[in-house]
Length: 242
Image 1 (cartoon, rainbow, N blue to C red):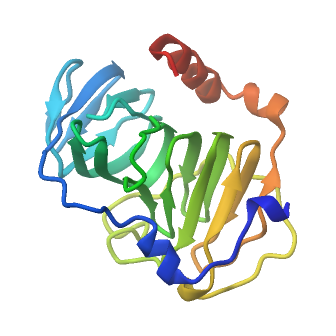
Image 2 (cartoon, rainbow, N blue to C red):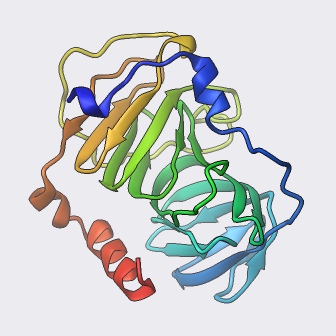
């Protein structure tokens, strides 16, 4: 377990994401797959459409959305999900990127392309956490009661962030129930300055709105495979060459 969790100062958390040079290339995000309906404001998305961040997207009930980012990474969103594409900057010549997505409510699958350059920024923000990656596959679930991260390949870095007004369920969004993780023992509360957690493949990490968490633990792969959302994402990854 020790190899998957380290407590670092917040200085290292932010400095690890700093780009060596400012990226000036604005990338476009492609709607690569859409089942059901998804909207940007009041306009319904269409397959093949390109989006220029920042944009807020709502994926409706019985719907799925797949987005391809400028660097070739893929984000997929399950039904009843609300998100904001904040940045999608990519400098192909220098293999640098600065990408940021906010997942306000719902579920996301991220298949992140690994780039050779070290000074890359790829972040997924949830109401209480910031997840940064270099190249990996993971799933994020945001419900009113918790944020949950499950890693399938590689590793992610998760840091705590206090709940802000823009994320609070009921402020502008209706909270939804998502099938939750099994109960874990020993959660504790810490401040933002105290920790950054490394979560490796085959492990899950659960974080609560008040900052409580337990160390990453293994999740049941066989049970996870029974989830239709997980199976669909793995099929899409194979199809796209991940």
